[in-house]
Amino acid sequence: KEDNKNMRDHLQISNITANENHIKAIEKLCTEKNEALDWIEELMVENGELHEKLIEANDRMEEERTLMRHDVEQLQIRFHDRLHQQTNALRIKLGTLLHQSKITKEEAEDTIDFLNQEKTLVNEEN
Image (cartoon, rainbow, N blue to C red; front, side, top):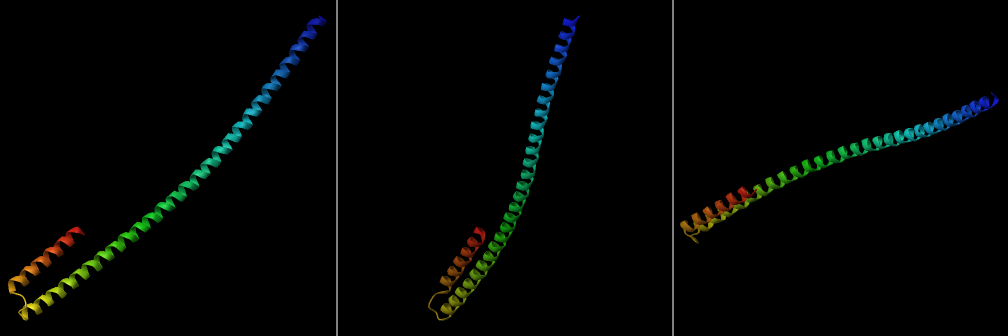
C-alpha cells in the first residue's frame, strides 16, 4: 500500500511538473504572439504614414503638372502672338517694298503665301 501511495504521489508530482512546464511554454508563446502583434501594429502605423506621404507627394506632383501645363499654354500664347506680330510686320514691309516697286506684285503674293504656309505649319506643330 505504501508503495502504491508513493507511486501515486510520484505520478502526481510528475503531472504537476509537466503541467507547469506546459503553462510556462504557453505563457512564452503568448508573450511572443503579443510581441508579434505589437510589431504588426507598428508596421501598420508606418504603412499608414508612408501611404499619407505618398498621397501628399502625388498631390504635389499633380500641382506641379498643372503649373507646367499653364506655363506651356502661356508660352504658346506668347509664341503665337509674336509670330502674328512678325508676320504682320513682314506684310507691312512687303507692302512698302511693293509700293516702292522694288519687287513685283507676284513676288509679294508668293512671299505672303509662303508666310501663311509657314504660319499654318507652326500652328499644326503646336
